[in-house]
Length: 64
Length: 315
Ligand SMILES: [Zn+2]
Ligand SMILES: [Zn+2]
Image 1 (cartoon, chains in turn purple, red):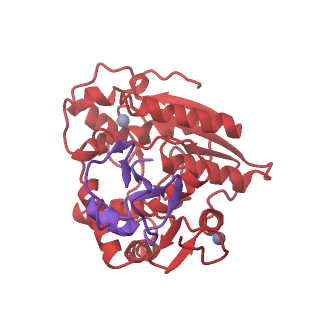
Image 2: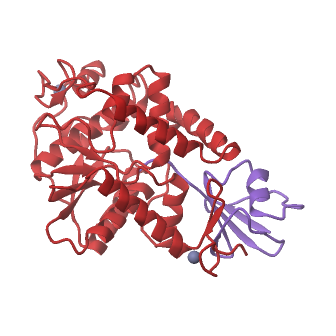
Image 3: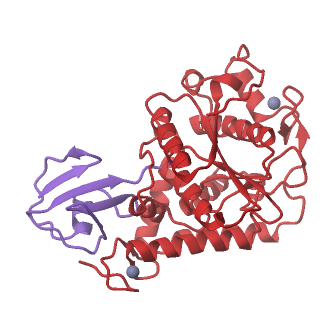
């Protein structure tokens, strides 16, 4: 699984991660403050992710 | 793939507080409906024809402009005028201003940029004297400049892109700082309408959660800058935001319950609970005390050499 956080590649094993919610908690984030795209599409925290997926985590920044 | 609760498209957002899933279209419909009913409920554009929109270029203000433009596009009696305040934060505001410009020209909305450096001092300079909290400076100066811009362009109100999260964080912070008058003054529809000098500030995104604003903006391809203010880490708002988000994750609906508490509180306040408005003795802008917060902060930061003259700047 390839994971980008705000455009930067994340070098960490995602073994055992099966859902978007699981992925967010593995990297210490929550769905309150992040939007996740899998293979270019916005998904929900209920969706699943697999080893062949390209994941982008976009932090929800504060400020207007 | 999770499927929308209202159609068979793929969902882009799950709402734990309603247990519903939304596709991009149904999230957009819901968000626009919420903004529209907030504007109606508080009479945000009632008897107002020139509506200013404070657009920084971040997700909230660009989404607010986009939705207000959609909702008012057939209304020939009302004009939207975008106002951007440039605090002079290099590497941050310059990028977001480009987004504000791009959206305004896409929508055909008149756009004016006001620079701190022309009316006071640069934020980066002020930050060498960080007094209480960096956001205090920024907020005070931004309000001052917006008020001035509103009068220069004859605006009847100015829309501020505060979303649900911002509103409940502000409420929580005012409790923590023992600022009951600030709670009284922070109203959805601008509050202090008693003074002609003060332009009412409206908050159309009042009932839209932050992450839903973000999902809306991404889905609708709105150009926005997703960066954090370089001084945000120093502010009280940050731990308050984390706390409320962790409560929301554990107890979905917390933010809406906080909003309802705040709205019923200000509903029950007697008229005139907020302080009467006077004129600042130094700059003659409206103020709740003898000298306004801006002038107070300016003299504290010993930045009195800054320019006081006022010149119109168009984008
Ligand atoms: Zn749908
Ligand atoms: Zn003053």
